[in-house]
Image (cartoon, rainbow, N blue to C red; front, side, top):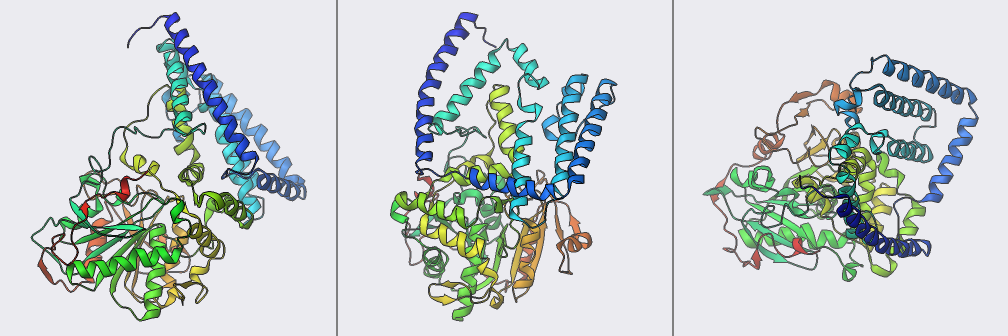
Length: 583
C-alpha cells in the first residue's frame, strides 16, 4: 500500500470537503425541487405518519401487548448482554454479522445480540397489528427500515471489521470511503446513488449481450433481434423473448456461460428477442396497448416474414410476462392461434397480495406520480431502483454502505448487478394505466374488466400450454402470488418454483456453477404452502426442465437453421442494436 503523510491526507481531505460543498449546493437545489412538488420520492412522509398514527391507536387498544413488548425487550436484551460478557455468544447467521470479529469480544457480541433482540421484539409487537391492512404493512416495513439503519454494523465505531481496517490503513480507509461517497453523490447529481458494482467492468456488446445476431425490424418502441444459429438445423417453430422494459433486454443474454438466449440456440431453437426503447418525452403518450401492438404483435408478424413460420413459442419476464399474458388473452378473444406455447418468468397476474411493494402504491401516490410526470412525460429510472432496493435494504443498501464508505473499498464486478443498475425510464401513460388498472384494481384476473386495443380480454380463455416459473425468495413478484396463475388459465399449465430470487433464480444456468434447485409437483391444491410441502425438489438449473417442456409440446419437426437476413426482412444493424445502448 502506498504510504502517504498526514499532510498529504489533510490536503486530500480538504479537497474532498470542497467537492462536498459543491455537491451540497446541488443537493439543496434538489431539496427545493421536492418542496415545490417538482420531484417525486418513493417515500411519502405524510402517508407514513398517518400509518404510524393509526397503528398507535390500534396498539393503545391492547396495552398488554405493549407491556409484553417492553418486558421481552428488557429480558432478551439483558440476557444477550450477560451471555456476551460470559463468552457464550454464538456466531450469527445474519449476513450483517458474518465476520468472526463480531464474536471476538464481549462488546461487539453484546451490541450485535442486543440489536437482534430489539428487532425480534419489534417484529413480535407489530404482528399484533391487523393483518391485511396497508397501514400495518407500512408500519412493519418502515420500522424494519429504521432498525436496519440502526444496526451496529453500519457505524465505524461499532463495526469491528471497519475499525480494524481503519487502524490497519492508518485512516486511509475512511478517506477512501469519503471519496466513494462523493462519487456516488456526484453520479446521482446530488442524490445518493450507492454503487453496487464496478461500472467499468462491463460494456454491453463487448462483455455482455455478445451472442451474434442482427436487428431485422424496428419501430418506435422496440428493435427485434434475430440471433444467428449455433446448430446446423433448428426447430421449425421460432421462440420469441419478451423482456421487461424496466431494465434492458440483456438479462437474457449476459455472458456466454449464463445466457439463456445462447442456451436455447445451442439446443436447436431459433431465437428472436425484443429490445425495448429507453423512453423519452416523445414516448409520454405510449400506452400498454401500444406496447402490445408494437411489441409482441409486431414481433409475431416480423418473425413470420423472416422465417415463413406463423406459429411461435413465446416467453415473457416480469412485466414482459404480464404483457405476454394480456396479449394471449387478446389473441384468444380474436381467435388467433399463432402462439403455441407460452412461458412466464417471475410474473404475477393476480395482484391480491403484492407484498411490500404495496407500501409504495395507492391512489393518493398515483396522483402525486401523475403530477410529477406531467411535464417530463416519464418516470426517471432511479425511482424504481430505490423502491426495489428498500425491499431488500440490508443486501442492496446497507451492505454496500459498509463496503463503500466504512471499509473504503470499491464493489466488485458483478454482471447481474451491472444489469440491475442499467434501468430505463417508464412512459407516463403506460405506467399510470398499469398501476391503476392492473396493480391497484387487479383487473387482469377479472374477466372482461380490461380491454386491449378495444377488445375486452379474459385470461381464463387462454388455452395455450403455459409454463409458469416463480422463484422462492422473490421480493418483487412473490411466488405464492404467482402460484394462482395455474388456476386462472384454462390450458395445460405447469408451475415450477425455482430457488433464490427475482434475478438469480431465473439466470441459473445448467453448469457446475448452478447454485439453486427447483421444485415441481403434479397436484395443485389451492394453498401454495400445501403444494410446496408435497413438491419434489431437484438440484440444479430449471433450464433443462423448461427445454424438455417446450420440446414436449413441439412436433419435433426441424429444418435448416434460419439465418438472419435470409428472409423478407434484411438486417438493419448487428446485435445488440442501438436501442439497448441508449442512456
